[in-house]
Image (tube, rainbow, N blue to C red; front, side, top):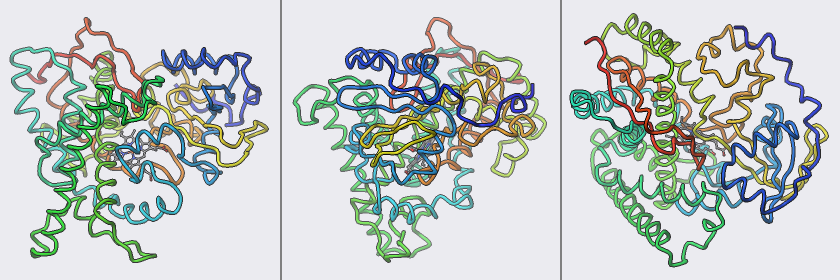
Length: 469
Ligand code: HEM
């Protein structure tokens, strides 16, 4: 199944410079994007090709589906594109000027300070904690779920697990009660942005029940995180350094910008902490939830995975050092994120008029790139709907353009947690799949829900099968 040899070189095809779709009806587009954005995008791609424009309320949206177009916006001409649009403004209400939502010189300074914290060597130190947290979940929760043959939502379980892991990476201790506050607050934010519904653009002071819930959650989150930061600053200034936890919070407080020699204020640390919590748990949880769903449908893939895990690990828990010897485990995660990219779409604001291969991108338009559709581009992916992890093996990947696959974005705004996330997803899958397999409950439909991230709308309900019993 050679994928790449049959794929043409990444030249934008002739369909890629079509003008504005004839369907200019503002409210029809609003309805379509609210009801089912992916269906709308796929229909537009079929009719108009790899680059087109459509109106949405007061905005012009430019959609670029070809890997070259994606590369143009995220990398080659990234300076012309910022995040000053409605989508990011809503996320900003929670993350403030954190890395995900800030722009320009301020973002650059923050990225310079935080990048070293995410070096591979440092992040690898969290590997043991990731595996141990998963093992605790297996012993404390999954053992009895399996024994009782309880049907449960594994997507919710993955959310709890990854939140606990990012919490420990940030604060060393488990988040405990804060975990619930963080997740609830994020669910509120997701609802606002993701539904593409007019109501979500109501000002946040408007006294609706949803707004009150949202404001309360945000307030609780804020005061808890501020308390943790103040306590840690005090500890750093009063206690011997070998007693200070080596976690992300300490690294953020100690980070110094090499150019200006500045450190972060409590508010800046707060924005980055909340950004890392939010950006760092739901995405990885979704990647694992979709992986479990796909595995439940593909016994042949499961068999091959079990064979790899058993022959490399022989029953012991995985470590970071094992990961290079578990290539199929990695390919499963990659293929799962191809079909269900957790960050399924990304937008940018065009600062000046621009052009890509003859296609005009007007100043002020919202540029939309969507891994969900590009990851299914038939010029680069053979049989795109098929779950086939081997397509990520080196022999099947040659010649594939870089931006045919971009679950972590690209260019200067590439996900800073990419290594953290890939390591985490692989370690967690290896730990869980070594002991358990899942059987899907067919009574609960699997429906992708493209909000800020792409979740399974009704969860992924399963029962557990213990392996080797
Ligand atoms: C499977 C898991 C993950 C996926 C799919 C993912 C995806 C992405 C994507 C697509 C972007 C770029 C957004 C844009 O260009 O607008 C991004 C940015 C970011 N991600 Fe992730 N992410 C994941 C896990 C993580 C983790 C574990 C962390 C931190 C612990 C993290 C922290 C961030 C931050 C801080 C940014 C903003 C970077 C910047 O603009 O400088 N992400 N992520």
